[in-house]
Image (cartoon, rainbow, N blue to C red):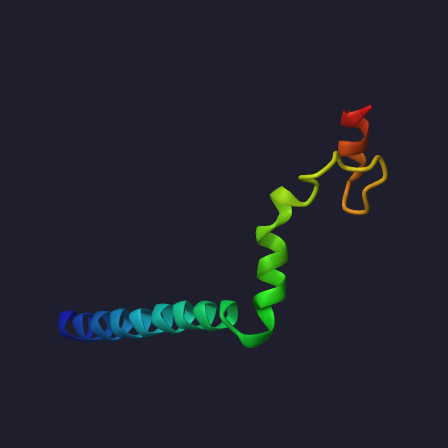
Length: 71
């Protein structure tokens, strides 16, 4: 019984490590895919979007709670 448990434990650990490696590589490849450069650049520039002037009162990405907080 204990021998079977040890064998199953070794298999589960190795398959678990393989699964985590595949998930990690998938996330990296998804992030670095060719079409994602524009999305990442736009996301990185969010803090500087209204750097020249204050945001307009009716900014398209503003939710209701932020509109109420500004008034």
